[in-house]
Structures are given as C-alpha cells and as structure tokens.
Length: 190
Length: 211
Image 1 (cartoon, rainbow over the protein chains, first blue to last red):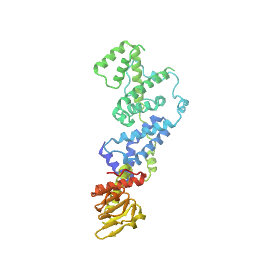
Image 2: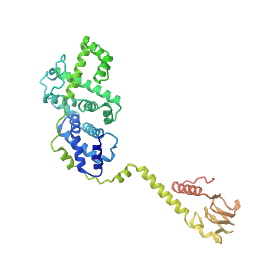
Image 3: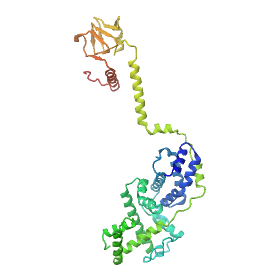
Image 4: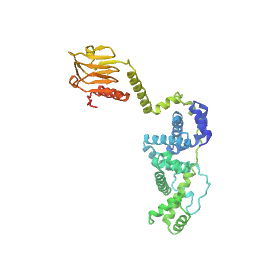
C-alpha cells in the first residue's frame, strides 16, 4: 500500500475529517461501481457505497496497516451489497423488463467467426442488457465475476475480499461465466 | 455435447491464462474440427468481452460531500479501543491486581494474631506474654483456630483444625485437637491456604484438609 494512503489513515485515526474526505475521493469510483454491478440499481448502489465508507470510518481502528487498504474497503462494500441482496426479494429481479431485447440482438453484434474487436465501445443498450444478465446470477458468482472481470483484481485479492480460498474463487468464476454464457446465448436466440 | 470434460477444462485454463503454449495449440487445433467446442469457446469469449467492457459508471454528484455530512463523531480514544479489543486481558489483569492486593494486605496485617473461624468463640482464648495464646483447660473451641506470628498452648480442646502461620505449638498432643495441626511457614503455602478457604466459602464445599 502506498505510504500516502497510510499517512491519510493515521490522520483519520486522530480525527482528521479532511484526510477521510481525500480517501473517499480516491476510492469512490471502484467502491460505487462494485456496489452498482452487485445490485444493479444506481440509487441503491449510491446508498450502499456511502454506507461502506461510513463503516470504514467507524472501524478504521480495526484496519491493519500492513494490509492493502483497497482490499479491506472492497470487502466492506461487497459484504454490504451481498447483505442487501439477501434482504431483498429475488422476485423483484424476475419481474423487471429485459432491456433492449427486440429479439435477436447482442451477440449478433459480434460475428462468431470474426476476431473480437479489442476496443469496441459498448453502447448504453448493451450495457443495460449485460447488467441485467449479471443481476440474474446468484450473488456468490456475481461477486466473483465482478471483482475479476470488471474490477480486474487478482485471484489472491478476490480471495481476501470474499474470505474464500483461491480454488473456491476460481470455481465461482468458472461457474459464473458458464451461467452467463448460457443465459446470454438464450437471450440472443430469443 | 460430444466433447469431454477435459476439453471444457482446457477452455477454462486458456481463459484463465494458465494454459501453456502447447495447450493453446491443442485447443486451437481441436476447435478447427469440433464445431461444438468452437461455439462454446467463442461464446465464452464474447461473454467475457461484454462483461469486461461494461466499464465504470461515473459516481453520482456530491458523493464525497454526502458521505462527509453523515460522518459520526469519533469519541473513542485509541486507549479505550485497545481495552475494548482485549476484554480478557483486561479482566485477567484486574483479577491479578485485586488478588495480589488482597493477599498482601492479609499478609501485612498485624503481626501477632489469633482467631477462630467462628467469631463467637474468640473470647474463649486467653492471651499471655510473648505473643502466646492459650486455649484454657476447661474450654472447647468449636471451629478452626488460626495463629499467625505467635505461639499457641492448647490445654483444652479444639473441635477443628489448628493452623499455625509462622507459629509454633507449645503443647499440643493430638488428643486435644479433633482436626489437623497444620504449619504454614512460606508465603506460597499461606496463599494456598487462603485460596482453598476462598473456594470453600464460594462454592460451599468442604475440601479434604489433609495436606
């Protein structure tokens, strides 16, 4: 962890609010996006991300300085999101409309026999569809997929965030992407 | 699906970027001929491509200000939180301090002392010179007699134990004492005696006093 973050945390422990504001500024983007991809609803994601920072603030004495701060923070955000999903009725997701499904779509953008364009801009409609499909994953696969493919974290970091051994994380990533493949294939054929 | 789990695992390893060059070749050769696996592999690639490119959304406006407005006051001083984090150490330390204080206060009490466990029996004791306490001939003490830093002369009877702490018995044939005569000379023995007494009074058990 960078010394700068460490210094900020030491100042927060002494009651320095400005130091904490800097930490929020620095980490708000990944924290908000983890929550957003986990729950799929921007308003709820904002509340959860705020709660995650508040929880980090009240528990800052428990954070161990020799560990990576982002891991600790993402863990709080992930756990809050999983708790939220548990509290929420899963039926709410099933009722929601599938965005952007006029039938054929999405996969057809990428012809299977052509190489994938590396830096292709994914349009808003596609983003909503992908988020919808992520929402259909069970939370335990969802968290692994998001941390791996959206936040681009290493298996070791993910295992620390989720408090699971690395092989379990791998299994969840494999099953998660397999479930996504099946679902996305189906909605393509619809 | 015609292809085995092994092909699936190979696809997994390639996607995890764990496959060796020869394994990658093996997969590429296989999907040239096997349309099932080719489709499976391409679908997974497309899925991952879409997920990776969903990108990060901008954080809502005034996010940091909203968090800062909700911050509670931190009143917990670092010392308090240390105590909170180690309740057992704190409890054990308190216990040791109290116990040591209690025992040293007992040890440092007036040097010569003689008493009976039943306080009502204390006036039967007769004191004489040279820190000597006498159990008179015609008296029967009911209870344990404890003498500290002195001497005891038992002419009558004691229905109980006689405990001599740094003390001597001048005349005590076993016939006069129904219980045991115990000599406690070291502080550890003396502490042990008190701890036994403490547990007896707390748990209402009468331990076997043979030592």
